[in-house]
Image: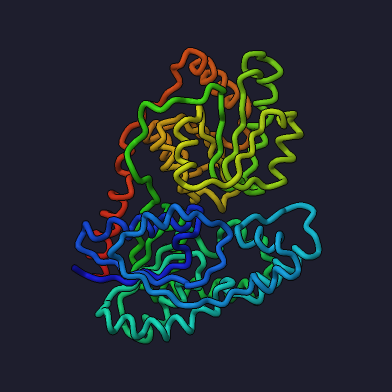
Length: 428
């Protein structure tokens, strides 16, 4: 059994999608003769907590922890609410307060690559002994936060271990990067660190073909695309909502605001009395104020049901009983390679997926290949109306369903098998 050291920031009891990728890999790696050893912070400042994930940690996995000093506690003296929103990615694009502007500028220019930069040096010192005592030859870092990759870089230089850098999201091309009010010098430093990591790692893992193609312009190191996936059995025989519920699970950030959908829904409510009486917009998770104001602008406030954050287990139940599942992404060329982890859990739920995102979005291809729903661009309103009306008629006759194909390839165990093959091919 070969050992690998996994260096991560997000780990149970953290909530949200960032924690699940490596929690699930750790769950299944031993099935492929790889023993994971995990290193995570002892006292992290997670914006979302989901204690249910703790129960999924394998009982026999060895976990090393060390204290981390983060700046969010100090920043919260200025504004606890604003600090929490920024740390969780909820960056308002309009009407930013002076405090928000200051926090973003400080975050972008004083903490490069991110607010965990001060954990790098003590982690390298601590892990040097762990690597030697555990007889570990391969390490894996997962980001963001990309400070985790700097830990890998230093351990690679110091110990000569094999190193895999896993990017759950891109680095300098990710959407929120442009909102950090970076100086030219700070932007240049981000680029430098990104180039360093991509060229010093032995291999790279990414979650989309778009990110792979982007990185191929920076490095000639081997790059493997391993998307996220779903865990557990595919849903069946679940009692559906009585209402025509269109549900979004997870954070609905400022830029993920499908205004053409809200317009289509307003028109359908005005044109079809039965649709008007049956519609329910259900949001499970954090919703940006910008998004809510847009929804209300289209006279849909009475249909909105704000559930808020729930445990992952509860979120899965909401997915399974919803009539339609909504997935949206920022309308930008920078986001065509962003594939939200919820997509694969939506597949597992076996409910129709309504996706709205940028032109050329990779999600569109996956939905089409698996026959799990329909994807639209942000400038398409009439076709969204037609589809929703068709789905509504099927809902009325209890015939609204999904005949998906080949979704088992996106199970977490199959994703882990692909990871194991990559590790044996390049690092172990």
